[in-house]
Amino acid sequence: MKREIREKLELIEQKMLKSPNKDGSRFLYRRERMIRYKLIFRGITQKRLAKELNLTESYITRLINGERYSQDFEIFLEKNLEIHYGFI
Image: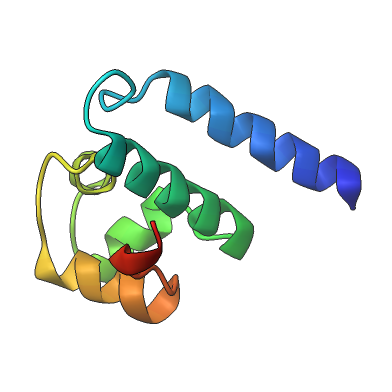
């Protein structure tokens, strides 16, 4: 179990190295990191999320990075991932 968690955390760190927010907005960086963390630990892939929201995978990536906005995505974050901006 600990090994699986460690591997998941390493995966998040690898993805965050490519983040466009790494040297930019702290809020967007922390938001992206939290979203990626919750998606991985809930077992939700970007492909599955894109299918659920009827969006493309590349658009989902932009939503996660904070480059784009979608009300449906924000509702998904609050209801399914329990991400509230007051705690980021």
